[in-house]
Image (cartoon, rainbow, N blue to C red; front, side, top):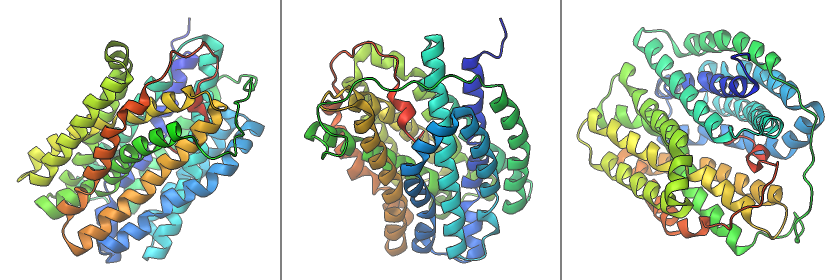
Length: 396
């Protein structure tokens, strides 16, 4: 039996996809300084990525369904790798917004292909790999941030560092993607009782508000962790990226262990434990006097938010008011809104107060998520060949 099975190839391509993006995240402070942007100006520019994702989401699904998951991964990787080079070459905030918008657009396309491929592998092999694949994605973005931090410590400019990482990862990604098996497309059987265009039920709205606080926090950590370490604690260039690296590491650890926790304690108790951890990490960041304690705070937050989104997907798909894909599509849109809203809110607060208070803005959202964990209780699902996570683009 070949070592590079369909499952392992899928996990490998999940790992490779976010490496270049991780190398960009740790260079955001450098680009901010080069463009002379304040926190509010940077916050507006950072809106480009989620805007690109939201605009692409309605069209990515039909296109991926037409050309197939493997083709979507191949084409998406090429477009995404080219787009990743652009932000560090931006000469003003407008061009930075456009560059990030192109990244968001291409990223949602390739990530949808990844999810569809993982779902197809599960159907064909009878194995469960979706959550583990997402764990490898988290390891990939952590690896990218570590590589970015190392290149920053060596003094390599952001534009050349990101271009180098993208150029090295792309050929390997193409080779792995070409090795992925191709499966015949399967269609969802059965329709929900309500139309896919009907307003979401109260049960679904509760799940959506739960996941909003989780993804708002994830977006905040991605965009502001390096700047927090620099502005609040005076971290140097080679250290600033460690905050997100630790955060991503603990997100990955939580995802790899999430299924075990869920089996032992149930979805609601697992979500409550993690919710308390996320709030504890945020409190640590608010009071930390040094970088070492801040890194602990980032790690605790990462562990706290790690399983929130997968648990929400399962709960939304378990509702019986309509087709699972319709409910999960609404959930994915709200999750993206969390990424969209969080970073600019922090930026505007930091502009008029300070970065500590800005990062503390995630606390009310996390409190709402904690109060809504009871919405994640679901009936034991019937056996099915469809994994609803494959319907989601742009959020891993």
